[in-house]
Length: 151
Image (cartoon, rainbow, N blue to C red; front, side, top):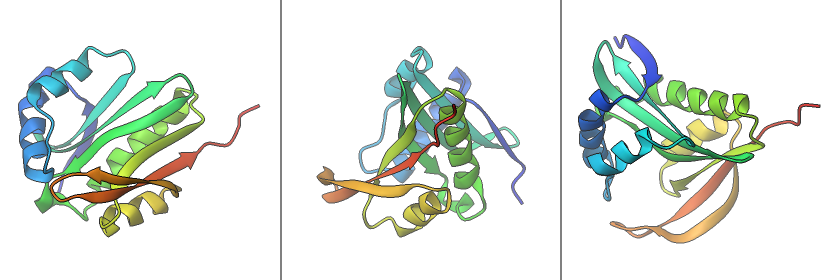
């Protein structure tokens, strides 16, 4: 049973997140890449913690009225337990609170579990980027959730 907490990414989380990146992605971000995000005013990165252990993370960039998800990762042994959903909800909430018009991301077209999760939270396929991913080469779907206008 996971004792899940979502918190802002701190310097103390960087090493664990970099290890998670290496575990989950064929072209992982480095500790340096992640440290850069800590100093960016437009970056909002969150970690999923099981007690004090990092089991997932998500990062978004808010630029003007747009929000883009950089990465989302969940430790394989913790998948299908609501961790990714909780992280994605935090990203959507952040984008909405910041007044953006939409939140968007790219996902491997073969990542059916992630696509199902995104759809369940209101994301729709809005386009494709051919050969976006390497190792293995694969297309990416652009998935976007558009927020209703607040008058």
